[in-house]
Figure 1: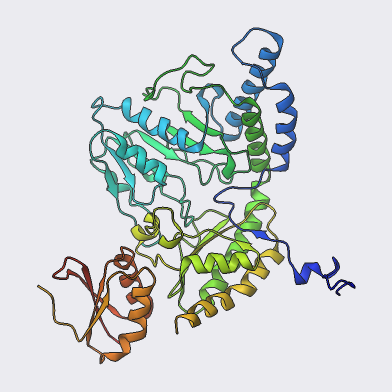
Figure 2 (figure 1 turned 90 degrees about the vertical axis):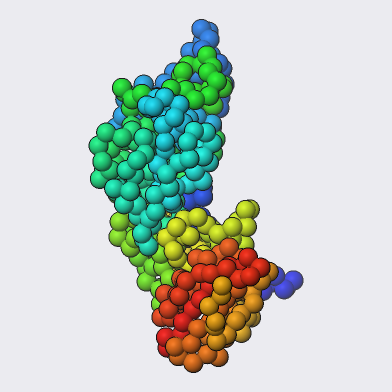
Length: 381
Length: 79
């Protein structure tokens, strides 16, 4: 009902002006409530330089060690294997390049990576050293573990960040040092067994941005590929962001504790999106339907401009990502979709947050067919 | 050398998804069994033309290069 000024009253708002629904957790999960609490408390206590010997420094050091211990427990690794970096990208760069530096032939080890790796991996692999080996994937985005023959170091993701397909990490041949990019799955799924060095990114599990996690397994030949620093942790450089690291650890602990419930709910919602999207004419849902991340689904709509699709969905209150060229800063289509050989235009990636509801998904699925139809109608199809 | 086509679609300078829209609109102009050539400078066409063929049940007949160096994608109408 409208009030006397003609404004829609709050009682009507849920149907007339629904709250925006954020469906892009794969880009950044909103801060977990556990992280928010911890961050606020740690901002008060964690400001000092953890290397100093006075009381505030001991406090900061305690918080940092605590963060390390919590992350180690969540990942089932040793605390001294865990390093906090300034981002997931930094963890990838340090992890992969350090593993390469520690691998024979010294300075000349060849990296093999799956064609669907995150750009952080590709940029690192191409930064220095011999031309890397790019290993193709199948239509679902899954790499053949045998395809890495000839690589001295393997870089492989636990799961694909754009289409959700899990990679056969534990089926890689033994012996070759493995860098695991676990950014897309960390916290949401247990780690594979087979890895030597791995990287994660806190804002993808509901921690704050600006915290990456690098884990170097005890006994791995890893050497710092960048200038050293005299900090608490010899694998890292720069002044530690203690409050953010502790908040990231708190979020990770909460996410791991609730992942069976949240994951099951998200899996069911994603199954519904997959089925409903596939029912729209000339829409292809991509990625593995079963062996996949619980919270993410990608599809491409024939004859539809990706930018128009994202903009129209946003206008109706749904925030989604796209791998289409027209939505990318580089104006090139997603390498992931290209490598899979699936339609790159009209692409949408929907990724659920931990509190995405059935009603959110129903609302999205209600508007999707009409949005696709209208954009196609504009080009006469 | 370019394979003779029954319909030549000049999509130079068009951005995705326009080359595929052009293909979808005009494939009906050739008889079943006929060949359409899509000449497209947009890099997405290299993935999207074969993907279109798969989704629409048509045959992707390969990539060539037009005399000016622009990629030329061949599609055979099957239905």
